[in-house]
Length: 105
Image (tube, rainbow, N blue to C red; front, side):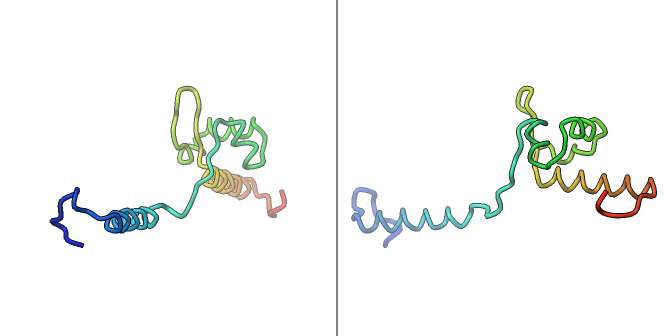
């Protein structure tokens, strides 16, 4: 297909070719990893499997600062996988400080 062809001179097959190539390029650009988000601390507590008071404590201590995605009004959106990893890392550090040994605690 010519690049200098006028728009009104295009055939249907040319238009289909242009659209299909644009759609295939757009499909390649989409990210394959979808991050699960939680809206609010109640939702985050349910998704990471701990109590709401624990989530409030972790946020107050600054553990969940890196997991915050955005603030919209009074709602806070968290990246669930990052919040879970940060909470686990924090708990492991507390176990080492207190001298408690074992993973099942």
